[in-house]
Amino acid sequence: MSDRVQVTVDAHDPRALSSFWSAALGYVHVGAEGERDTRAVLEDPEGRGYRLSFRRVPEAEGTGNRLSIAVHPAPGLTGEERMTALEAECERLLALGATRVRRQEPASVIDTGHIVMTDLEGNEFRLE
Image (cartoon, rainbow, N blue to C red):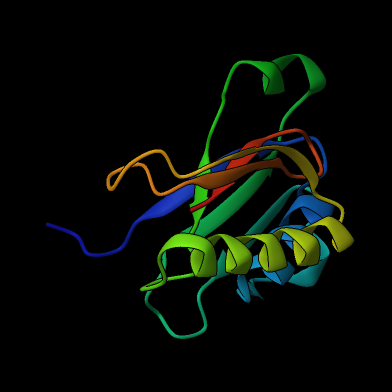
């Protein structure tokens, strides 16, 4: 069994999308800078998170492959303190170019609430 996982995202602009996710997650680009227009790869500098690859696809091919990334900026927090931390992260990501879609209030012990956003190319992700 492998402990290395890579998530590949189809992108119209791998350079811009990978730069957004690099800033959002604190990941670093690996590989040649000159190749980022066709394929850009990000890694967690601490070696804990998944490797993310963004590959250029023609406009028509990029519509069918949906992917949802969950970002966890408030580990260990609960209730209003957690939602306040999610809102702070939401504001930071808005400044990077993300779009806020909606906020889901905590409904139960299991459903602790989240914020749905989209990245620069309209891919949904959640702050959980």
